Image 1: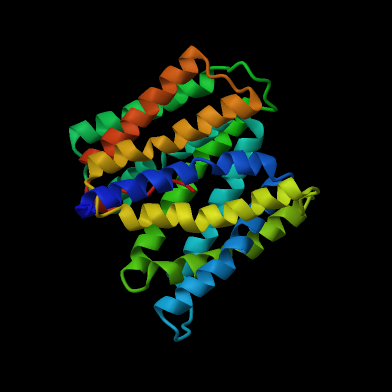
Image 2: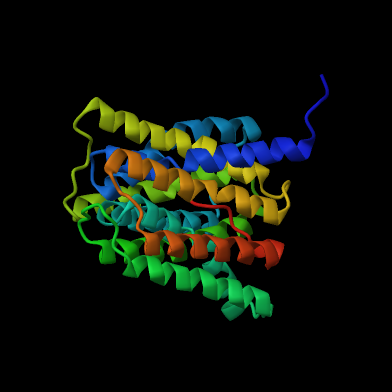
Length: 295
């Protein structure tokens, strides 16, 4: 039997990771605790695994860098805002709008790093933003708590994840990925727990299903995001962009099946335009401005 080429193994890992990450909004809905509390449990269940992986990579204990701690702060904001977005809007909208993170990274690079984008890149960003606006104007079939608020929270997630990616990328130059994920999780977990307490959320699930969902989120945080991080850099940008579109497709399909969140025509068209703009932006941008998708 011939050995599978490295490129195809990397693409398989990327598809696997995107599919696993696409399950996360479903598990957030099933977790039963408050949105910020679910984020805390997600990191709490992931920390022991990340600690083991970090110790295997480098047994010598080290102090966290300021960059890693800031990454943890922005990741906590990312999870908190996104989980609240999932509560108020549809799973499809929450997942698609949060995937605007590459657009945010490109915009931040333009403003702060003076990286002037090409015209095609500007057009791709414009398409992504325009598609997101179409989604916010459309109302699906399912009854939602507050779609406008949920859409706004989900879109703002892209800002926090974009900042998280930038700080993680800087810290990644000198530290292993497992150690950085560990320190950012240790920094983010208490912040999410404090937010849950201040907002008077339900801190713990009430059934075994809720606990299993929280544990699943922790496992997904390590395996799904880990597979994506391993594959990126080994797969060409256009292929990676297309493969990562599986995340909102999986999430939107399961939201339809499990929560009766059928996607309207305008909403579906906006999602296609947004994801196409994001994929094109990733394909034509510089390699440093290509973040992995959300967990």
